[in-house]
Image 1 (cartoon, rainbow, N blue to C red):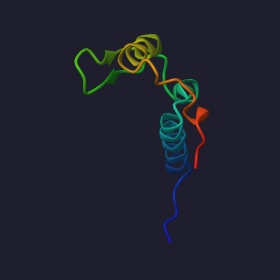
Image 2 (tube, rainbow, N blue to C red):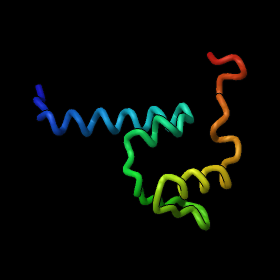
Image 3 (cartoon, rainbow, N blue to C red):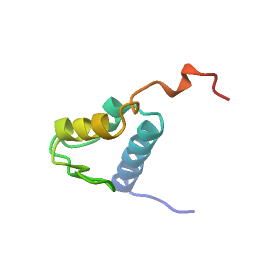
Image 4 (cartoon, rainbow, N blue to C red):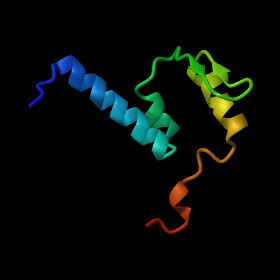
Length: 76
């Protein structure tokens, strides 16, 4: 059995929140575990940001439907 330190458990919890929020398209919850000065470098042209406002602008421009509730249609 692996015993994790409190710091490791905190990192794993933050990681889980970040990626679960991404999967659910919940940008506010995703940002809740990020620094105001987050640096984001995406895979597309001009997908770069140096803070939350810039990052939100990149998402809005690149993925205009990103923030839609994905369960507006029946989910299984």
